[in-house]
Length: 198
Image 1 (tube, rainbow, N blue to C red):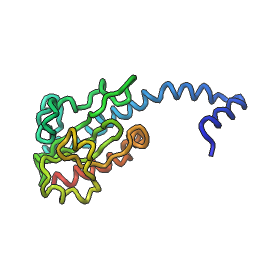
Image 2 (spheres, rainbow, N blue to C red):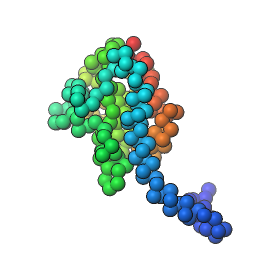
Image 3 (cartoon, rainbow, N blue to C red):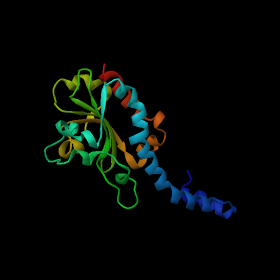
Image 4 (cartoon, rainbow, N blue to C red):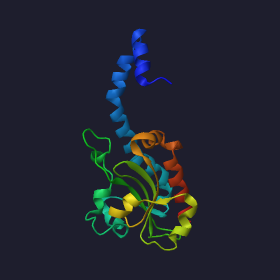
């Protein structure tokens, strides 16, 4: 199997424009990553959950109602709004991107009404898709069919109970978010929204 270096060196030796293309790609890739993450956390998740928002089945949590996150957070988290995604806090921004940001939707109907939040969230390395729970009681029975695992990383410092599927953001995570329509993140959020609000 050839490495990228092998392909470039062979292309340069043959007089092909690979080197210029590689330079251009290296310049544009960080902006592409920022764009894919931002779209997933804003446009795509909003489009996916818009029908549930319109029927009152879920409530989007934003700056105006960030206190809705409070029951799902450890007491050491002082500002719930600090966990909300905004473009200036993009993981892939130039320099050192901000960690621990996401999009959140409180369930308003179904067996977990007021007790669960759907989320798409990134920490220091992983993109997490799943639910936050305010209590660790029978809610786990409802969630067991969704292949969610309790996140120790998120559960120790930020959320009381985070049940997620996670993958490395800088690798397969960003590739999945680039094609959000066919991503495992979209599929899981759609499945959770469909089954948990009934």
